Length: 151
Image 1 (tube, rainbow, N blue to C red):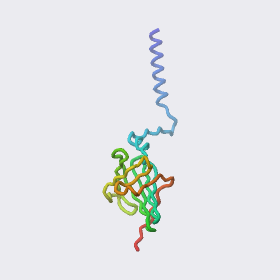
Image 2: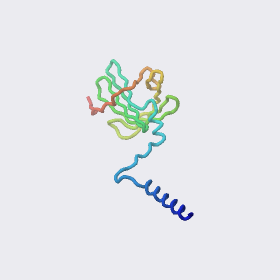
Image 3: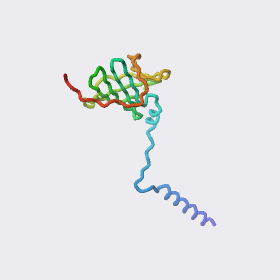
């Protein structure tokens, strides 16, 4: 009787190991996002933001859940410039932006870190030194940079 129970337990254990190890050929399991990326995905600034004014300025930011951002700036009928960088949350509704390059430049830091703030009451983001220049949520994306020209 004990031998049958022992034999049954071994067969059951082998069956569980085989079933758990089987996958469909060619299929892969998606890796779970890193905990930091999961937290960032829930951050209120993730997404695209836009600021325009009567002079024709059209400035946009897209904050990605992986901690990167891309922004495009266009003003006064000048060429659009695209900026790339990383962002990190520094406290309640406060973010540090580190620009790494522009659309027409090499991968390097091109300006000092900037502080951006999020206002939950107004659902806007703005640079700490220009609170009057708010970005609002936008359903589009950033603009593609145009080639830099000399005049």
